[in-house]
Image 1: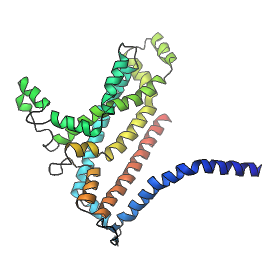
Image 2: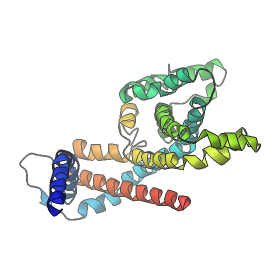
Image 3: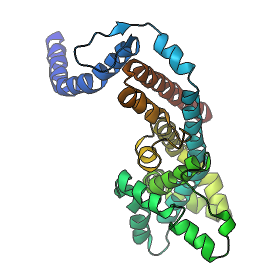
Image 4: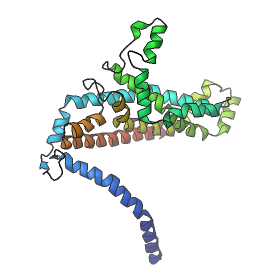
Length: 294
């Protein structure tokens, strides 16, 4: 019996070994190396000594006003995700899982922005939001609302919210599929029984669809929180964190510290802080949803 268990354990280990090696090479080692580098001062020069500075990099990051501004912008992204993206995605999921005509075309149309590259989407919206010839300002001028015309990507605070709206437009289709997967798993018998009891329209969504979609909301919440903390490509392609770092995100700050200012130690400290923050918020989100389920 023991021999059989040992053979089973050996077989399981052999099958898992390739995946474990890949995980160790591309996840464990980079994280460990980043933690190691966050305690040292290094200018990124190959062969140069990495000077031990202890927690100095962390204190510099926490004392940096730009870091807290970037976290505030991440908070704006999270607010936009929960206030705009979540209701929008759930509404689209309700539409494509309904019995309306043309749902196949709607699925394609709603999911189309997700299939475009982030750079293509960013450049498209940079032209649309251009203050001189962009479509948004041209439409406002055409309908007599020229006073509302803005330099959407160069005005502090307004620029970060402009990027947030582009982000919601781009990822609404992706999150729509997450919610749709949860909706189609709800037994139709529940809806039929509720309809017999007079629960129709909005009441079915409120008392059946939303409560039974908690798992989808949990997945969305975790992805939204972690995604907002590591947002880089859309911001970089549209504003590069400017002007005057008004749209800086933690990931763009990390990039600039490493490759613009050659502060690889401080950059690594930012990465470690983001990792800890992301794990902590994810665990808190899971605990909140677990309490609701209990």
